[in-house]
Amino acid sequence: MKITPRARTGAVVAAVAAALTLALITGCGSGAEAAASAPVALSEKELTELGLTGHDLEGFAVEVVQQDGSGTKDQAKPDRFCGPLAQVYKGGAVGTPAAETVRVALRDPDLGADFKEALRVDVTSVNLASYHGQGAQRTLRTVADAVEACHEWVSRTARDRSSTGYTAVTPRKAVGAKGADEAVAFSLSGKGPTPNSPTTSSVYCQVVRHGNNVAAYVTLNMGKMTDGTPYELDAAVVTAQSEKLSRG
Image 1 (cartoon, rainbow, N blue to C red):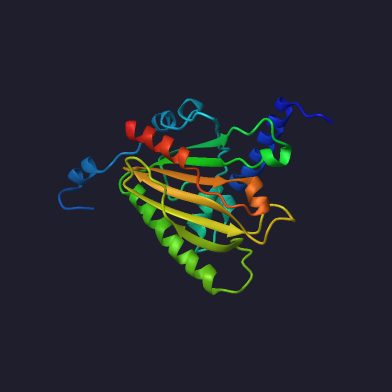
Image 2 (cartoon, helix red, strand yellow; image 1 turned 30 degrees about the vertical axis):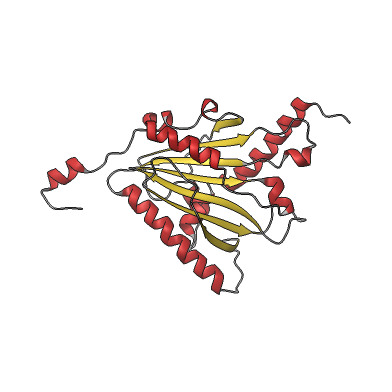
């Protein structure tokens, strides 16, 4: 049966989106002075305007993820060592932001490729969150501490890891992000997405602070995860979102 480019593209987007859905589903002075100097979070409207759109990324489709209000935190049930990393991976914000918005950026697939090859595209979720006070700084410290604690725990224990699903948690060099104050990058490795996948496959994550706003990125590539081909965090998405935050 011949598959038209339009039908193939729709099938690829649907397959990748379904996979991603599974992953997603202080100082001295008076109190008045401290309150006046404390950073104030952006409103939901202001934060939404800073989110990526298709105009910001040539060669990508960008979609807004509608949050259903149930919250990824309730669904994650994280363990005490790796919980914040699970939260990032599932597309949620760490801590308690005042505003939050989520985008998914999908590289345009090759219309001439067969279905299996067309799945070899990067899909990156971007969670933007804005915090009052020192919330953004605490979020980065929490994630950095969790990378170290989860890495050590997974490395030294030989017991069943069904509570996290990870076989390796690896600190990584952060992708450059314009205007960033600090960043933490890591990969999570575990069983591949299909029964025929290699023993382990990885997803790549990075959390970046811009003032009192935090951007959390997660890139996965279903085709490459299935056959064990290496890939990386999609730097183009990080660059585009960072530049937009810097301009904002």
